Image (cartoon, rainbow, N blue to C red; front, side):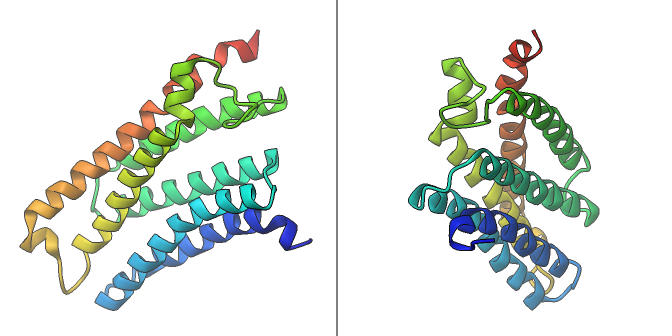
Length: 203
């Protein structure tokens, strides 16, 4: 495999392993492990933007790259929500919603892909203006990403052993949970156009 020609895809895959390394550290209940998990989480989400930048810069955009990007997003997002629930930081409803949403939208998008359509870009399956705005607009994608990353990173911070800000600074914990709910609401809302416009795929 030519590394240079597949740089964006390599980054998409590598970010999964970076996220998993961060998640593994959350089960090592020391301050330093959590601080390192915080840094690796930041890197993992920065790589999500990096793969798109590299794809555009080196003209590596492709249907396969689009699939890998979404695949990486799903694995990372579901993994974090699940581990946070296992650790008792959030309700189990968060990963359940995320998983249900992922199966629904990605199942529909797999049908769209078989018909030559993609989730985003010029061949997007979204044909309505509101659907394109909710699913593919820069504003919605950045807003969702910011809420999600802020919630994930703050959850790690407030539950860091030896600091435990959720006890000493309850207002920060309240803000963190508010961001978590905002992120999961974004997750659901961005699935609505995919479902609403899926009828044309089955005619």
